[in-house]
Image 1 (spheres, rainbow, N blue to C red):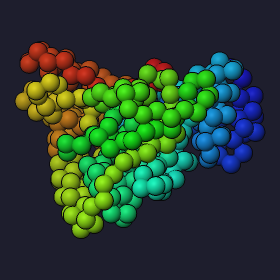
Image 2 (tube, rainbow, N blue to C red):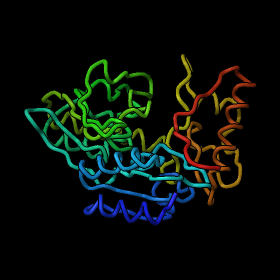
Image 3 (cartoon, rainbow, N blue to C red):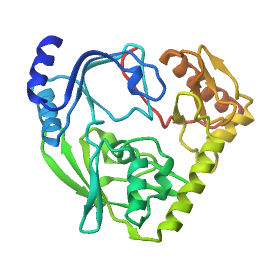
Amino acid sequence: MNISKIHEDLQKLVPTGKVKRHEVLESHVFTRIGGRADILAAPATYEELQSIVTYARVNEIPLTVLGNGSNVIIRDGGIRGIVLQTSGLTGMGLRDNVLYAQCGAKIIDVSRFAWEKQLAGLEFACGIPGTVGGALYMNAGAYGGEVKDVLQSALAISKAGRMVTLQGDELEWGYRKSVFASGEFIVLEARFALQPGDSAAIKAAMDDLTLQRESKQPLEYPSCGSVFKRPPGRFAGQLIQESGLQGTRIGGAEVSRKHAGFIVNTDHATAKDYIGLIQYVQATVKDKFGVELETEVEIIGEE
């Protein structure tokens, strides 16, 4: 690939967004680890995003979508091709009593916007650190709620560069997954069907969930959030704790002493440290309990 040529072409296609070469990605993810992107392109409009997708397809350039990096580990070798970052698309509003939010908006901000408009249903999302696009991608959930419970439809772009509206069964919801995980579509916008509610009650519920999150999670360190999916009938954090793994370290990565379901970057960890510790935890839990822990975090990039 001619990185200079790609950079030059994308600057023309993305006049109001940002295009960077050889961008260090550790500052773009919550774990604060990861190598460089050949090209990082952050569109400011749907049309610019569509142009990037079409350009990558026509020129057979690998394309990786990145939100705010809250649930991803980028390997130390970085990412080849184009990294399409959605963080410049943050608009939200109301249309006919349906709350819409663009893919790069933080789901926490969307839940607060819903509260301001006295709309109930997104309280569970008040502590989820990802973007709207990421929340739809993995059917994010917390404290008994999931995105699928409140999503009416989604505007998306197909691999072929065509804008489509997906709803109902087309979204293929599952536990921490949706149709977007297949790579066939990229989220542009979510439309949430919420219910009128009492402002004070909504705020009280959000305050309670925020307190629970802050008291239980190791927010003082960089991390990717909850590393593992919940095994059927069990809790990953409890299995890890009962395996005596809290405080276990590889390099600068450590199984949190505060919440065993988290792996934190305590001292300039590398992706190799992080992934090695994940694999060690999986092997230990499998040996002790016969349970195979599946990662919730996305691991991408080159070794």
